[in-house]
Length: 176
Image (cartoon, rainbow, N blue to C red; front, side, top):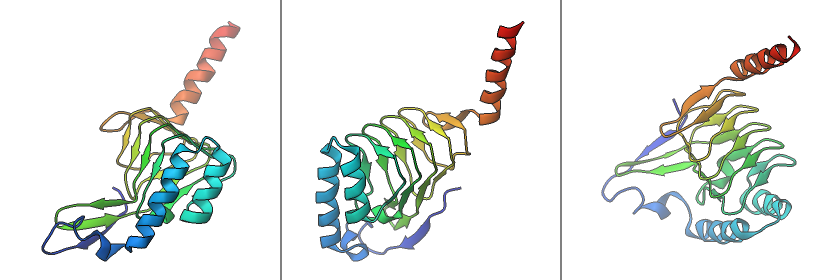
């Protein structure tokens, strides 16, 4: 289960009431910074920009590819460990605006995680160290450390233990 906090709204849908939940000038600043970052070819500049201007936590040697879209409303709720990759055109959402409520939840991405192109990570999700997310995956629940996951809905393709066992078995076969 994702860890999100729910906030009920009355009257118009929650997105229509957006600026009651987050200041307009914060959204405008974040929009500008993210648009510059999305097109910036330097992963170092992008990392610096997102850390300093958006208050995202991004570990050393972590790379966000071109066109990655961090949450525009609550980027400070995104944490990415060291030496990880977020693939081309992926989206990291720390919010969900629904008809009668909105939800907020931190995204925690571990160290040495590989997120393929065109993935969407929903709010309140933790992705464990060493996990691999296949391209095009909707990450709607936690991903165990070292797991290889993919699809929509996301399923576990293999665990780290299964891959280690398969790799070790392959090495044993070569020796005989």
